[in-house]
Image 1: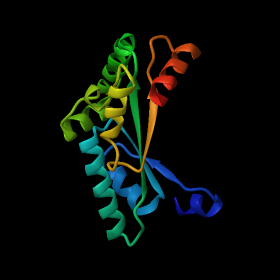
Image 2: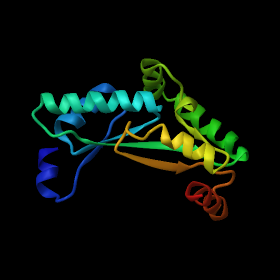
Image 3: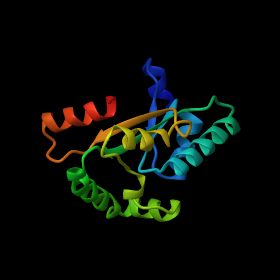
Image 4: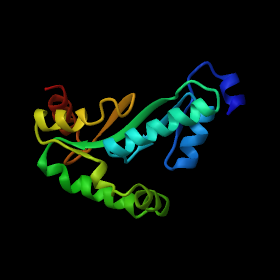
Length: 153
C-alpha cells in the first residue's frame, strides 16, 4: 500500500468487511469503506478503526459506509433479493454471524422523506460519510429520479 500511496496523490480508501481488513486499513490506508452495517455496528467499527490507527501512530481514517436504501414499498422485493444474495456469500454470511445481524437489518427502508431521513439520521456520527445505493423497483432512470427526489425532499 505504501508504494501505491507514493505513486498517487489521492487518498487510498480500503474496502473492509471484517476486523482484520478494518485493522489493516486503519493502520495503512487513509480511509475505510464499510458495507452492510447498522448504525450501531458502523459506530463500533469506526471506534475500533480509530483505536487501531492511534495504536499504529496514525491519524484516524475516514470511515465511509455504503448503505442500500429504498424509498418506495415496491422496491422492497429487490432489496430483499439483494440482501439474500449477499447473505448467501460465505464471507458475508460469516461476517453477519460475527456482528450479530443480517443483511436486511443493515438497510434503510424509507417510503417517504421523513422515514428515509430518520433511517439516514441513525448513521450521523457513526461514520464520516454515507453513500446511498438506490434500490428501485426497476432500476430505470425514472425510478432513480424518484429516489433522489425523495432523499432531497
